[in-house]
Amino acid sequence: MNMTNHRILIGSILKPTNDSRMYEKIGKSLSLLVNTEIHIAGLKSSQIDEQNIHFYPIFSATRISISRFIAPWKFLIRAVKVKPDTIIVSTHELLLVTYLYKIIFGCTFIYDVQENYFHNILYTDAFPSLIKPIIARWVRWKERVCKKHINGYLLAEKIYRNELADRIQEPILVLENKYVGSAPDTSKIVRIKDENKIKLLYSGTIATSYGVFEAIDLVIRLYLKDSRFELTIIGFAPNCRELTKVKNRIASFPFIKLIGGEKPVDHTEILSAIQSHHIGLLPYRFNESTHLRVPTKLFEYFLNHLPVICSYNPTWEEYIETYRAGIIIQFNNLPPAMDILDQLSNATFYTQGDQKKLIWEESNLQNWYTEQFLQPRSETLPQGV
Image (cartoon, rainbow, N blue to C red; front, side):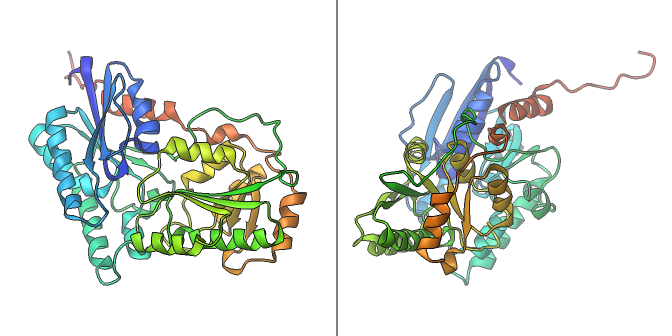
């Protein structure tokens, strides 16, 4: 291994090259290691190269297209050009080509498990019902086949240790999508009632399963009782038909604004929206693929002291109670608007909890990577030597 120029290639297909996890978290954290170059391949974005971080678009079309099948081979070609010491893949679609690269050229192979893809495919509407089981089993087969050739795993959720027990092996590092930045002023207590405008925010993936229509219904109901309420929907809609439904639904409501939709929105723009709004929404519908996960936006809302209105979820409720971060309602059976208004007006938020625990664990990643893959392996000497 050439330690004077250690190269790490990080890749995804549907995530932009400036994705918050690939770039802002994993990429930037590992770029701080001595003599390390970071190369990131993914969906085309506006990000430009930095001193030791380089970006390569390998996909820019719609989710279902011929280009998507070509993208893994573009990633393989990029790997041949970069000659990485380590490849970190952030999607199952790059597993087989990375396996092929490792066989031919040799490298450290790390799988950054951002989702339980088997569950996601089976329990969401990303694919037609008839082919869901076929695609899900294909993904699971790839993960099992590549398992013995993968040198390490990063897990974005604690629950993946159990859910993926048959497809992962040590060394494993659980690395949740916590917030990049410093903890807020803990003396800052948030109140809603005195605002001239009350701006609600729905950020991230725009989809039915994530509750976008529940967010719309909520703000309409609140607006009819109090015209201070507004809603911003910001993010990317992977399903064009769902996006059309969203646009049609909000067309006659000027107090609802849509940012993005057709293409991913830069994470910096989403963070800016978080910092300029008063309440964040987590209106997820119950789904087997998401109900035990902690969404990135929860950490982002909390670390920006944005009170939340959240659907019932035992995992999220624990966080909300710990930090007094918001209120919990049944989005599928909305309570009277005045009840919600009373809860928001009479509550004070972020009055307790150590929010430093929600900060991105940069040193954990650096130490794990260094100890597992950069330290020289000790060799056992024969007796008497």
